[in-house]
Amino acid sequence: MILLEINNKIVEDTLSVKIRNSLAGNKPDSVNVVIADFDGVLFHISNPDSEKSKVRVSISLKFYKDLQEHGADELLKREYGNLLCQTEDGYNISLVLDLENIPTNWEEIVKKIGLLKRNCFASVFEKYFEFQEKGEEGHKRAVINYRDEETLYIEAKADRVTVVFSTVFRDEDDIVLGKVFLQELREGRRASHTAPQVLFSHREPPLELQNTDAKVGDNIGYITFVLFPRHTNKNVRDNTINLIHLFRDYLHYHIKCSKAYIHSRMRAKTSDFLKVLNRARPEPKSVEKKTITGRTFIRTP
Amino acid sequence: MSATLRPYLSAVRSTLEAAMCLENFSSQVVERHNKPEVEVRTSKELLLNPVVISRNEKEKVLIEASINSVRISISIKQADEIEKILCHKFMRFMMMRAENFVVLRRKPVEGYDISFLITNFHTEAMYKHKLVDFVIHFMEEIDKEISEMKLAVNARARVCAEEFLKRF
Image (tube, rainbow over the protein chains, first blue to last red):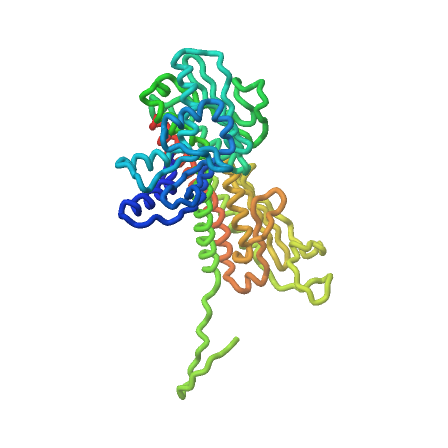
């Protein structure tokens, strides 16, 4: 599995089970599940007001306020329309599904609900892609603190949109491994002519963010994506958003996989060495001896 | 590059064979104790001259011998950052399992990456020529393993980058 999935499989599966159960005519059971997703996002599937026939899916994002500034509410209304309901306490958005009136296209709706996190992010990107399409410049940069010490910056210019991820490498080795990955991404033009330009800056923020209060440090890296109209036009916009919003998780997932692989190799090599070392031990001489009359006895050294 | 490898390893092998002539020797300083003299270093007459065999500035082997023990310290080739962290991880991994390894030292000597401590008890329980074989085999395999791990990381990075970018 090289690419990460953008939908939340657990949400989709839980809802599918409940719906199938209902369609088969069985009485619905109560449900109360809390699901964690990337970037500290929590999903909560429960029954509103203990009504077993309704299932409510709520999402909580720590940085929802930042997204609201850029029109997240409107986009969610557009996508989910009648599924939106009273927001649950402690969460940011809630959708409700009535198990007694399941629409015929329920599979599509379940898939849409699985994309709830992606749709929350999508609004910011769409807004700035629109700015670039209309050729409007001079809009404020979007700043979203999607993780504790990591931020996402989006800026639209007349002919391009720049997306900058700031990421923290908690481990020193991660920095070196991260650099290898980003070196390959930078040279990614070889792989595909349509690929966007990727730039990487270690320790210091790139030129666009020079005079902001962007963090500086040994374990901080900035990754810039330069998206041109061929990535942001209406046809491919959704695909671009899908790929970009999970990039930071993608990078760290692969760094962790590399470390796990290295670890398993080291384990194999170490046991190899042990085998060679044990060849140095002489084989224990057989200690059972026989006399001429046939008596056997064991000599202990 | 490998033109220097054979003479380097054969020099290390002959030095080890000469240095690994160990006999039991109780401590002169403390009654009824038996310590590896190369670690304790209290009596000068029990220690032999240390020998350094260098292949180049970065790769060398330090062999310190004494009457009842030998300490072998190896400095491994680390050409760039990623080799450095891979080597560091690998050495740490093995040194944590030093008990299992018997002849490995838990901490490397200053200035080197990994150290072995072989005492007369080890040479009494194991064949001497096989111990020397082990050390030489170790030196060869480490370099190979670190190159392979580095290749694996680079290959993974390339595949990930390609997969990601070709979706655009």
